[in-house]
Length: 268
Image (cartoon, rainbow, N blue to C red; front, side, top):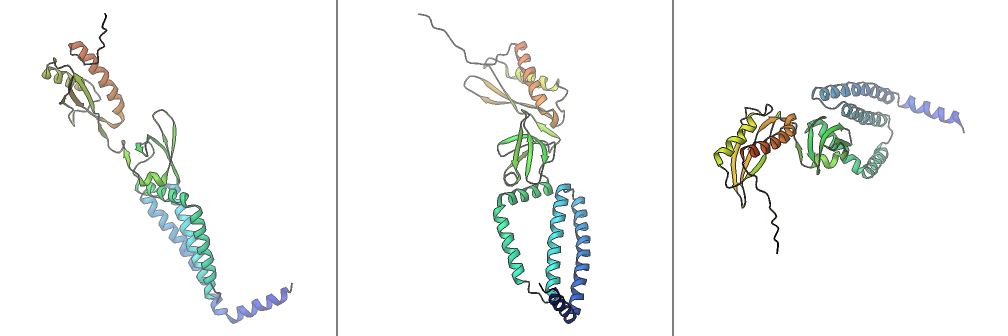
């Protein structure tokens, strides 16, 4: 291979286009410097908005590489190199990669939306995509939940971000909805007072908002009451179980019957 020939051609090209070569170097130096500053500013803005650190790094690197590629293409075109084919190749390669990673890109976009808008955070108890559990980890592509049975649930961020999400931990207080049925022979006023006493005797039931006991239905075999105490969100299940147990004991002690199916044995 005639290296001298290529060297001579290179020198001749540089001498002929010395002005454009200098401008191209300036574009590279200034462009890379501006890219570095731009990425820093973007990361600081994301940090102020509380964007997840993983997403900050990923988006910062992605934006940096895109800007650098554009700067290199601009510098190359400045010295007279045809960049149309080069851009077309990059576009085709990007399209091919996008089609191959369609599902992953959707999950990435979903993860970015979750980390930016924060419909939930680590430690929240949520219900989504037919599953419920405590958020254990939010990653770029998936979100991990711990179910009440301590099972690991992994949800793709693409479908998670596009579906309905119920966040039970977002508010500080929650209402426990319970229903009790008593016999038609029971005194309504006495029953309401007893149910309210059960709520007021529980130290975890909040005084404000005030708990409520209402007659909700005259059913076929029972008079039904709704019992609605307000509690701190973290005490939801504790109060749920405590009120159930305390109500059954209080009704039994007062001689108020809870109707249930009876089996009658017929002898011939």
